[in-house]
Image (cartoon, rainbow, N blue to C red; front, side, top):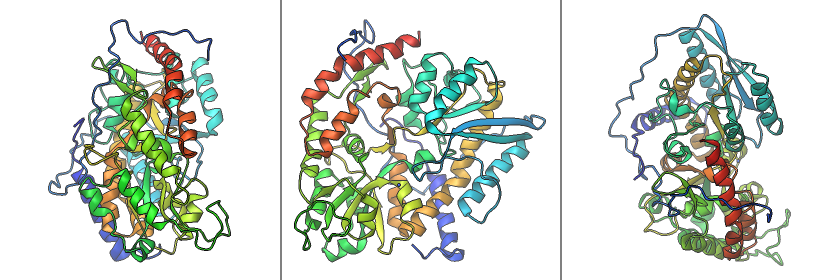
Length: 497
């Protein structure tokens, strides 16, 4: 297993928060031909090492000892600490600095965390939010002008990779004030994002909530499942038996024309689908099946793995779902699910937190299924555009930036995350089983880091388009992309020398 950090403190806090919510809160109401081929390294092995995703699939609350955090004994005389960030989009929470106490428990807790850090270190937190499409040129101009305006950048992986290749970002492994191995930093992101075992330019945690909100999962309609005489799949998930075949079995049992002439989407129709999905579920299904576009070899160098037999097998299995009429629909997934016209929905955590709070039927939550039962762990895909923390070379005080970010990310896990669980699991899910599933999902998150480094634009969207259309024969497409992707990997690695 790649790492096995204990999240018992988090789980304990979650359960406490949820119990309090039940007792005191009103929470009963209920998303290139011109490319020259290069190699990654003259001595590089092109064989990926076996990939095992992090996280135990059953959370434990036996150890309730809080992780001890040592707050550095420093203050900064009221200095402004500025963060560059994107504007809110896709119904996800991007903003970092709520303005005041408003009565919203999640934003209020985030506000109080920021206030506590401001008082502890005698700083003033500020945030600049820029439209996503303008964010990269804005950051580039700031560095090129050599103006130390922002202490940290919160950017998507592709944006960070572009700045990294130009030498505009600090290598975070060189900054000792960041507790790089601490559980409040996403350890899978660190392991996959570290190149040649010595370069890392981004970190992820739960201070920026968009990373959690963009995590994929499977929802199911409890009432529809009960009407079909199906057992809720929670125990299958606990036992490691929630597989793609099981999901197909459930989905196919629900598909029904219900008086309609066809399964073509009709907003006013009556047909019922097995599972309605966002298009972004294709990468989630691929990674969920323990298949990857790029992995690491024994020398910690990135190598292509989308030409593997297993990758092709996973795509074939996905196509068996997407090619079956009535079983799969990639359109208006939230509306279909909320209208009881889809037994399941492949979506993101944000759907329960922000989009389905008024759904009348009760629903539950599950991780994305495994390829088969022999697969060691669930793998949960994060949105490729997840915003991550980075430190530009123009930062006026790198040590201060590291201390503030480390403390805020620790505080987000200890103080903020339980309130996010409350928002998802009581106003949306309302059951202890789904709380357990949500923790499995959080502990097994995986970012398609090859896409984040900008290597996969020539292959990934095309593969996903084929799969949505029910075509799983991706081998011709993947073989054609090898030279382009290898060249891009080589350019990135050369930029680090």
